[in-house]
Every structure is written in structure tokens, then in C-alpha cells.
Image 1: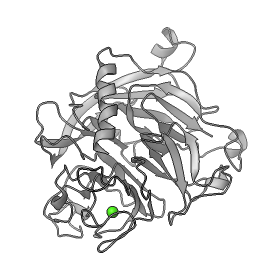
Image 2: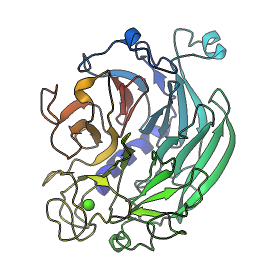
Image 3: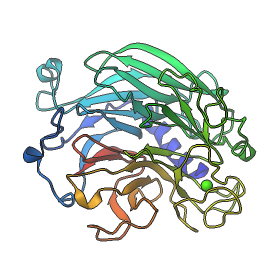
Image 4: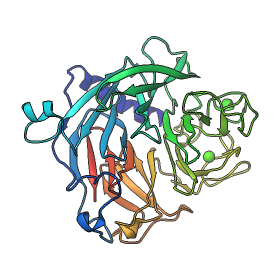
Length: 386
Ligand SMILES: [Ca+2]
């Protein structure tokens, strides 16, 4: 992943010299009825009837989240958190030059480093975000390479201003360019899970006393839960990962994580993975990856000899688009395309013209809105499918 992601980083740095605010160019039709979904109003379809539509032009939107109220949040890698409210544009919006529609509002601008694979890399909303307006972001700070940080931002009711910015977790990092991980996800247990890469130190991944190469588990306030698999003071939840850059939970509580295979400097370029994670389990890195497992839990899917650089992942739960219900979708940085598999990693075929392959434009992150549509991003834009 390293060299390939770095290409994106250089492009980003070039683009960020002149800061262009995101441009909202579309809106999901009938976006997000608040509260219970009104299927009779938005309709149900076996499959999304057409290809994805462009929603927002943005600058390397690494992570996306949609609240239960239909607020779209995204982070740009260079440090900015934005919000687009398709449902209820503010009075300011209506009175401004954006009177024709919604616009993106800058919520926070966090000093980050974008060297190597650093940046604003992860985003999660508090599980009860409607009432507890906490947004969590994963930060590669500008002032030091020694740590990565998870900030908890308390937003105002409108979700457009930061009332408090608190660093709740500090994680080990270094001057090494790559393998920073950085994904955040809440589990159905209400805990905050953090995917952290090995930081180019492969022996760190199997070492339960080292936080690198792990999925970590925290309380929403950043404290360590006392019931972790490696003792009451350890946040370590799953081990033996290389550079996980996608993490999501099914409604049933299964955790899915993408992991990037060797890139040449630490093994033959190959073997990107999709893993189904379980508490306390070991996932093979650095001695086992791809098709050949001597130790640890094998992935449910791997890319074989190809390098696709898997990123964001989303377990789809949909009454509205029944053909996709139960599938696991993930983005690929190299192919810039959505891959869709079943819970055991087999190519999904239902309703797809090409087994296992969804729409293009899915390169960085993917999430599902309360309208059951899929929102995903590449380095230039956010799209909606459905
Ligand atoms: Ca593995």
C-alpha cells in the first residue's frame, strides 16, 4: 500500500496549496426521512435502479459518516471536517448564494501532517449522535510524529460548530512514512474501535503489548474497558494486522476489516485481505497472509497476486435494496471500484452484472445512510448509489 497511497498523498499536497471548498452538486432524492423510514414515500427496489450519482466534489475525502438524521459528515485528508445537511439547510444557507440548495459547512480545521500516509484518516459519530453530538476523528498531528491521536469533538445542535475538542486517545507512531491505519467504528456494544497499522514494524503486530498492528477497543470517552481479551488495562482487541484501512460492524455484531497485503518492502506485492474479526484472535501478520496461513485466522477474501489496496468497508443491511441485503462492500484504492462479497467472502452475484463488482468511484470510504443508500468516495468526490 505504501508507495501507492503515497502517490495519492502527493496529489493531495499539490491540491491543498489552494484550498477549494467542497462543492455540493447533487442531492439524494427524498434524502433521509427523519426517524422511521417511510418506505411508501421513497419506494423499495430490488437493486438501485441506476449507477451512482455525484453528490459532493471534495479534496481527498478519506472518511464519510451519515447520521440517523441524514446529516452527511466527511473529512478531507488535509484536516477539514465538513457537514452537508440535505434535509434542512440553515437559514444562512438559504439567504446566501447557495439558495438553490445545500452547501458544505466547514465544521473543524485540524492541524495535521499529510506526509506519507498521514492525515485526517478516520471518522465516527457517537452511536446516539442525535442526542450526544460527539464526532470522533483520527489525526496524524502536525506537531509531532511520535503519536497519532483520536479527538472527540462536541458539536452544537446544528452540527456545524465545535464546542469542545478533546484528545481522548494517544497512540504510538513514528517517523516511518506508512501503515498508520486510522479507521474508527462503533460496535453494537457501544464501544469505539480503532484500527492501527503496524507502522512499518511487522513484529509489533503479533505482540499483544504493542498497540500497533491491532484493532483496539475503547469506551466512548477514550478510557479502556475492563473486559478486554488481554486484561483490564489493555485496549487490544484483535492482533496480527498489517495496515487495516476499513472497519465496520454488522447489525449482528460481526466485525469486518480490510487489511493491506505486502507491498514489496515487507513481502511480495500481493494478498490484500478482507477479514472477519473476532475478539482476541490473531490474523497472521507478518508470517501469514493471503492464501497461505501457517498461523492465525485466514481472511475470508484475499486478492491473490493482485494489489487492489482495500479501504473502507460496509456491511449492507437493506430492506429497500433487497438484492444487496447481507452483502459486505468495500472500496479499492487501485481499482477505484466497489467490491461486493457475501459474509464468507464469496463474490456476490445477486443483481450484479459482474460477480463481485459494484460501481466505480469507491476508492476511499463507504457507508450506508439511514435511507439505506450507499455513500462512497474517491479522491475527488462523494457519490451516492440508490
Ligand atoms: Ca491477515
